Length: 486
Ligand code: ZN
Ligand code: MN
Image 1 (cartoon, rainbow, N blue to C red):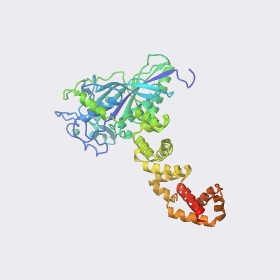
Image 2: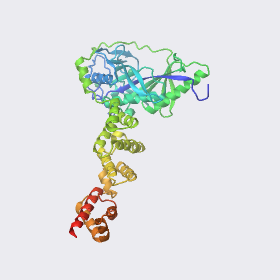
Image 3: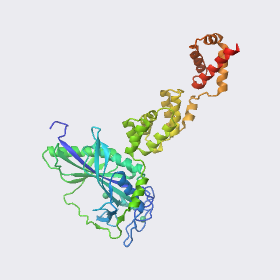
Image 4: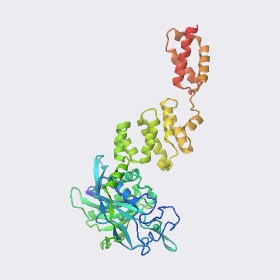
């Protein structure tokens, strides 16, 4: 093997857990609130008291079906809940309610870009509804359990092992994330664990169909961690195979602090979850009527938005892709483009280059930007009207962003005010004409080039702030008047 060049294909499948953005939990009326005081959003049902009965929150079914429709899945009119048993302190019932043999949705796909930039279809095996567990953490006194999260509704989205690189895996995750947030069924706060994923990886010799032993990396909640974890694991497995040893079936964790993989447990003795059908809940029935209604309620999704941005606004594929994948950015763009006098391409370019750069530099989320679409349009209109240069616009924009001020305010603070008051301009022009009788005569005798000189004089005396259109109009009017007066 050439040093640094892999003889192996990575075969990657992903399981994504997305928390649904319902107000209340899946089986009870407790509020879903990740920031509430520990164990303050808990009742007998979500804390697993014996003898209590779960009641399904129908909003969960609606959201899961919408995700199924948004990813081209077949929706099962009849699906079931099942119990998956395991012991963990943050799972007080001793089992998780999930869906085993018949999930709410199955057999869908989304389209991503492969490593060469071509469209690639990633198949979705199934989408199942389940409940989240509580959260445990360690302190000096021992283990702490917070049950606020217990009973938060989840959908688990299981892909086929169709991805071949960390790049494709991240592309797939970003597309799923974009669909979930566009559907407004997931808050998408990665740091709160709203969107977490498990990665399955095995290697196969290049060109061969058979795949090797598979390992699983659990619970990643950042795109960068996914990328890093996959790269480390591909390297680890290929080194094992090269040294003539065998990869063993293991579950791994990824430490975001050290950016290192660590082995959690070997899977040689596969856990028996003793699945059986949940007896306390009736099957989920999705009627054709409900399905049609939810389908009608679907908003425009990223792929069709991207196509529309290209045809309607003339954006490049690259710009359209970036803007359409982010719900807030897409709306921001459209609102600013509506108010801008020039080509929408300029707005897109400004958002992607300048705005995203500042957001990144100051570590501000897109949703929390201090700039409004109106302000961006006002600034770009000033460039369009040639009141300020592109270079000056960048400074104005930075000031708007950092000092959280509107474009009008910053433009006037920096002296970029336009004089559009006719009486002020008229006074300047009158004075100028009175002071330059020879030039006026030259103009009137047909030397029209002199006109530009007058414009220059007005701009000089107003330090460039005179409204150019109005200035031209007024100079013409004054000079023509001269013709008849003398
Ligand atoms: Zn509860
Ligand atoms: Mn799960």
